Figure 1 (cartoon, rainbow, N blue to C red):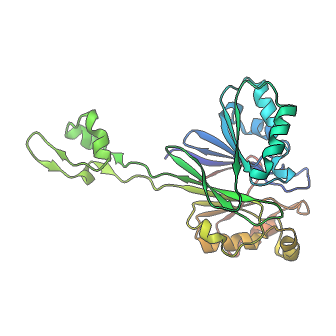
Figure 2: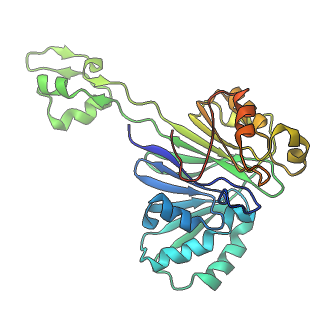
Figure 3: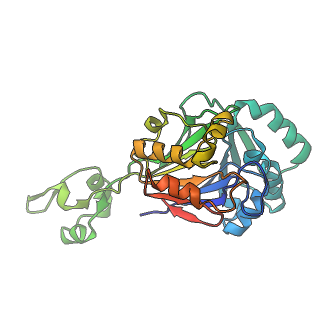
Length: 304
């Protein structure tokens, strides 16, 4: 299967620590690279990830707290200094638009590439990006400021051609797409070869849901039902459940509850409070509810 990977560049929260960087991930799918959130120091983390600056084609900002967006303009400026010419798309809450334009005018004049801002309504579920192989959909979340998550979903692909059968029946290349579309093949002797002998089933479309920051939402599981991988913020352990509720964050138990109810394949934890030197307590509490839970850490890469 073609790569569908999640590169973890940062998994900390608002207070800077020596253990983690501010929130940022890169989604690699079918040779395309999309950034989610862009906290302070992101461009250094991109360097460490060995993802070339020129390959990032879009940035998705979940909300306007500094640990999710303070690194954006420095990175845009650096992209310009490295000779980038490919356009860059920015998807962010509509409330960001005026500040974005002002900051571009102040800090990013004279770029030799085009940066386009796409305002996002965080209160609605909408497809905000689409190409021939992928859609990106917003997931409304509940935080102290307008906030949404993002659902990356592959489009269904065509079945795989059985090369041995194509060669055996001397099917010309010009007919391959018809076979992929479901056509049978008629030999020169008039025998009809059913389509299911000429193909193997297509790979199941994969999906990744990113949910940060948010307090526990009882109905969120419906939005992320059945995804292969779910990232759900897990700022606190259960002993700080009241604090999570006050500041519109989640515990790892609550993240695991969403994963369990949504029947996802894998849960990634992150956005850890600075109070935790070791996040094992977050992982153990999550695994008690959803065993296939994992701590994220800078430099990790997860397959979807």
